[in-house]
Amino acid sequence: RRRLVTPRTIEVSCRDPKLYSMPVWTTSKPLPEYLLSRIVHNNIFLNIHRGTTSQKIKVAVDDMPDVILQSFFTKMAKKKSLMNIPEDYSEQDFVLRVSGRDEYIVGETPIKNFHWIRQCLKKGDEIHLLLDEPPDPNQDEVQKEEWPLVDDCTGVSGYHEQLTIHGKDHERVFTISLWDCNRKFRVKIIGMDIPVLPRNTDLTVFVEANIQHGQQLLSQRRTTAKPFTEEVLWNVWLEFDIKIKDLPKGALLTLQIYCGKTPAPSAKGNLHPHDSPSSDPKYKTQLLYYVNLLLIDHRSLLRTGDYVLHMWKIPGKGEEQGSIN
Image (cartoon, rainbow, N blue to C red):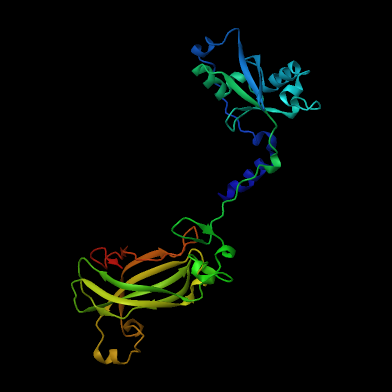
């Protein structure tokens, strides 16, 4: 993709902005026989509209759009006021556009090779074109699509200045900006279930939760270790040492399930109440399952609510795929 940047930039700088702002739909295939039979003496009729006035002219199917405009202005030389055309305007100040479509009849292409003209001939419809002023290439810019910081369930979106709670009635605020959330981010681990238990039942299990941005570890928390059974319930909040407003876009919540041998009673007694047995260097652990969850999506929405996550197993470690709530 990087190799295409330079040639693409060169092509964009060399292209004709006037023609590029007026899309055309043409074909180089010869006219089919059944369409040639509908053209009388190699001529067709065009209805050219300008405002509420229209004029029908006869043109050759091999005429170019510029030739058609020139013959039209020659015919309307003394009737410009009827078509609401200023007297000092000529055919060079106008282009032909398909009525009701963003499709132009311009360029060095015979009128018979425009797709819309052939469609009208095929259906037997009259050909209606608009005499329009060419678009300004300077105003032909790509529309920027901005995603809001917060989007509530009603689909109403806004930006930080609109969603901030400062200077507003709190009873009327339904959604708030992430930049106003000063409390620390937290996750509630309800529990996990394992379809098939390992052969060794004398094991404990705990969940390690990490907040990562790319390869950078922003914060880490762990649950306490509990006996390894088919269903393990913690029902605890893990509060990270990072505020919600400081969560970067693209941050991942990584949940990992570790197991290890049940520590000796003496080792348990030396641990701090808030620590996991896994923090003990003598407590050997083994990673079984993991799962990643994007915290802030492409619309800048922070994930909230209940999730049932089906985890990936480490090859050769877990028997079946587990799930965590």
